[in-house]
Length: 464
Ligand code: ADP
Image (tube, rainbow, N blue to C red; front, side):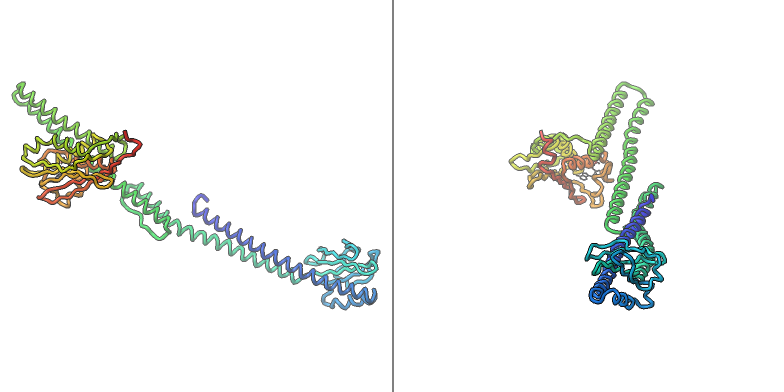
């Protein structure tokens, strides 16, 4: 009985038993009560009739009458007795079958009253119902009746109930078994799927059947969870591969530089140059690792954001000033489209600066000389809309799906410096501020990155 199925079967059997018992007792009580009432009514009628005859015609006539009342074949079922005031039997019907009756009345009623008794008389199968009734002059009448038909009927009722009871309990258990089997089919399939997962066959979703909404929802939730874990595993796999690849290149370069310097004629300037390059590569490596950690932390939700009141407009201006020399170098027009009033927002200053810088860095990086980059900001209802638009190489529709993934770099951009983490970090920072990011881009024409940041983007209790 450890299984749910077993318990359900047991519960159904129990339910059917209790219900069958309840119905039985209800019908039985009504039946017994009604039969008893009819017998008693008949006894009262008969007794009153005799009492009247006794009052009118005396003992002799009543003795004859009671003989007439009982047919020959009824002697075994009915008897009449008349007692004297001294409780001695004066007259009676044929008592052949009633030899074991008590000689004296068991229960004498009050004067003018009557009472009933149910007697067990040896030689008689059923209980005998008897009435005592006072008659004129202190005489006492007793009529006894063995309700054989009623007894047989009740016996039949018992027997048929026994059969019905067995059928009900069996069919209840069977029904419980069928219902539980059907209801738990989905769970069984889930269990099988869990077992498959245990045996490393992970990406097989459980088929949704028709076992009821609850089970279907459970299976759907499980499939979603499985899908999510699968995606995470794949992501982890990709990230691990990418990390291995992206760390190997700079380390190989560092080693190569060191080796070349060691094997070539050694001079102080050559060592200095090599050391400088190694430091630069190490800085890049450290930068990459910190960015990776930051993205991982942001995605895992363990970053503690420090929200302050910010003017995004001023921030955009600062970033554009920072990158102005790069733009100038490439003869790129760096334009600002900002409203006169400040664009206020509660957010993490350093992180938002980094996000803007990454986007602007990309725009300048992927825009050929003499292009144009436009930074704009505007308030739209309860959010700020910031965009970074360029007239650069653009991104194909296919690639647009992946550029926010960690380490993803479009092939075309392999020649430019970068590690494919920039947009991933921007996305994490935007999500950290409960905002969203999208890109609209046409290959060969340019791209526009749109950021939407809710003004009170972080919990107001955290505001400083
Ligand atoms: P990267 O370090 O390579 O710039 P990012 O994560 O910042 O990495 O960007 C991912 C890829 O998206 C880039 O390799 C580049 O191919 C593409 N990309 C990003 N910004 C732009 C842009 N403004 N114009 C064209 N391509 C872009």
